[in-house]
Amino acid sequence: MPIAKAQPADPALEAQVFWLKYRKELLALLAIALVAISVLTGYRVYRERRETAASAMFGLAGTANEYLQVINRYGDTPAAAAAYLLLANIQRDERKFSEANATLQTFVDKFPQHELVSTARMAMAANLESLGKQEEALAMYQLVASTDAGSFNAPHALLTQARILQAKNQIEDARRICETIMTKYRDSYAAIEAARLLRMLKPSGSQNSSIGATPSLSATPVMPAPTASIPPGPRP
Image 1 (cartoon, rainbow, N blue to C red):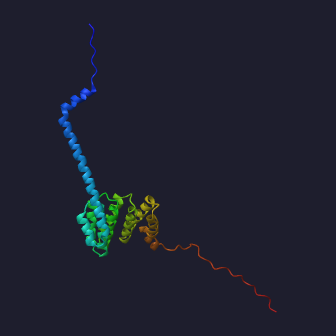
Image 2 (image 1 turned 180 degrees about the vertical axis):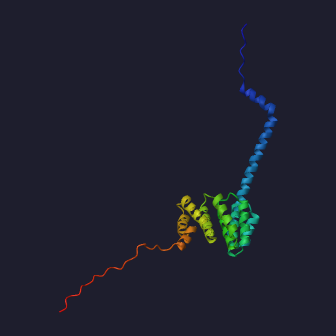
Image 3 (image 1 turned 180 degrees about the horizontal axis):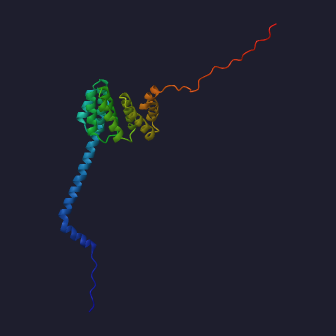
């Protein structure tokens, strides 16, 4: 008996069957996608308008209170990040070093990926120095040099460490940091300053050796130069 050949499937018919079978689910997915697109578009428009308003408000600010208003109203915008930095600068100029560091720490916490985080930490370290907290300042400079080694602040943080260590008479540690700067950041201005500082930092044993050294004396006594004797001439 001849075998009946299978009839080829009709794609249009299969699509219609699939649609009739799952049309509720497909319509629900389509509605969700449309809502998500609308929400994302609306949020993007909202963010753009918010950032525009924040930038306009920041452009008119110039006092500590005005920068605080930008921060309180638009705290998650780039304008607010800049406002934190300028507010801290005003507080430092007013010698409110602790308040300035609190402002900078808030900036670091809220904007940890900001390109000026290392700059903010350098300012915090300088404020700690102004408060006489040398150990805390040294730790902050070490943090900058270790966590932001590729930033432009890293060699300057190392150089300031060396100067603090010099003041604490930790000469060997200061020399080691200077050598690190000259090796790792040889093309930076800090390398020039490190070389200059290194020439001033004498090794710990150099002063003792120079004090204990005595001038060497020759074992051979110095004899006076012989004088030629003139024989007496004949008497007339």
